[in-house]
Length: 94
Length: 431
Ligand SMILES: Cc1cc2nc3c(=O)[nH]c(=O)nc-3n(C[C@H](O)[C@H](O)[C@H](O)COP(=O)(O)OP(=O)(O)OC[C@H]3O[C@@H](n4cnc5c(N)ncnc54)[C@H](O)[C@@H]3O)c2cc1C
Ligand code: SF4
Ligand code: SF4
Image (tube, rainbow over all chains, first blue to last red; front, side, top):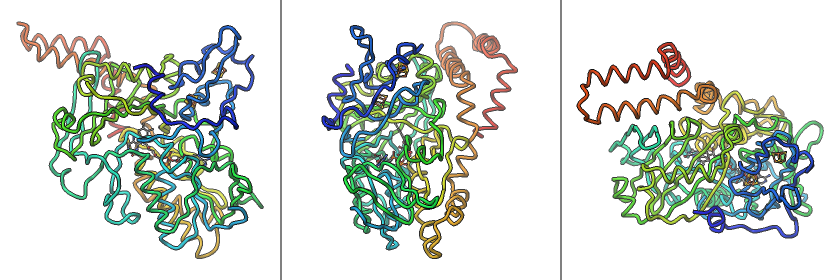
């Protein structure tokens, strides 16, 4: 089963006004980052390398708010917050 | 909400916060619970096996009408290799006697129910609200700011129950960022299946449940997986320490898919339909990585305080118990009207006397043992699986020769002195 199809099953309320709760602090740090582990440790594929723009893209609307990317980044380069109250994932089962 | 003064603010409506709120409300304390999710439980994930005993003194006649799935009568452990597993199994009719030892639960449903019990007892539960920062006056925590307009709330005491990421404990300087070795990411699926099919596949009757804990060489000794039965679904997941995910360049969803495809696992979920995909951290650093638990006007409970006994998959019961003890501490402190750190140190004392601290202390060496002795869960499961196959596979070689060969392999792969050392370490840390 593809990841996109799994994420489709989850209930989200996206914060269009508040915007992303995940912000990369300094993109130049990412470009020098040896492993770029945020690209693979995230269970939802939130971080994606955009080759055209030469930047990491943050698809925050797929985030399950686990916190792994924040802890995994050795440069502490992710400004990590929770979405505003009531936004983000809402599990049916849990 | 503004300008309102409460006796206690609880941040987070998980089992720790809700246990605290229920005990406080029942004692007539004015308590407010702040939860960021749309409803209590909407952000929460566990395997999940919930142990009943911790609810004593909090909810009478638990489980009563609580939304539980199956009571567990059969617990299995698998040491998984690529094509096989060696298993250990304990099924006991005593687990079919009420009150049941434990049940599988869905946290979105369970926490929502628990929040209703707290509300019925008199607690105010405010959802869709993010607690931001502690309000500090005269070196004392006197309240919380929230994401709402005019959202400052004041109280005598704040109970921090905001879970594993505990941004609050971090911002108060109670701990630094969690270490990568001290936390595991778990991903899970809820897979819908017909009730009768589950009963047949797991050899139980309706209402009865099975848990399977899985580790071993299939995961290179670096992951723990689980398969739990619900009424009409299977909860299946796999967890790995973040340090190992990073180092081995593992994608958690790929790991989950490889587990689902294992020849011992696939038949159990065959024909099932995935209903939900979930991800959550588990604090596994244990006793040595616990943060500060108290300050002036504040106590930290549950996952926020790293209270998980990972080898026994116990967390929610430690959360509930710590929440209850924090509530009891507040009630004592209120008699003297003293919520200073010194007065709240009663919470630490109560924890020390309870199974929570005793167990966390007893297994304090386990996280490091498993992190630095990968051999334990890499090589031994493989050797066991090979041994089982060799002994059971009849191919004309005498049993005597087979045993000799197995022992020779063991000596080559591990070495006798390592074997003795490993057994000693295991006995010291786990026994
Ligand atoms: C995959 C998995 C399997 C597990 N299996 C088991 C098991 O089988 N048995 C077991 O006993 N334990 C298990 N655990 C552990 C168990 O889930 C935890 O120990 C338990 O949930 C801890 O409860 P808690 O109340 O401390 O934290 P949580 O349940 O995490 O609750 C914290 C609450 O705080 C809220 N919150 C966080 N920050 C804020 C904020 N700033 N403002 C407002 N609200 C906030 C969250 O939304 C959440 O509702 C498992 C954990 C995982 C991840
Ligand atoms: S791990 Fe951190 S520094 Fe490296 S690419 Fe990701 S965000 Fe950037
Ligand atoms: S918090 Fe978890 S799900 Fe969200 S981006 Fe980070 S790793 Fe991915």
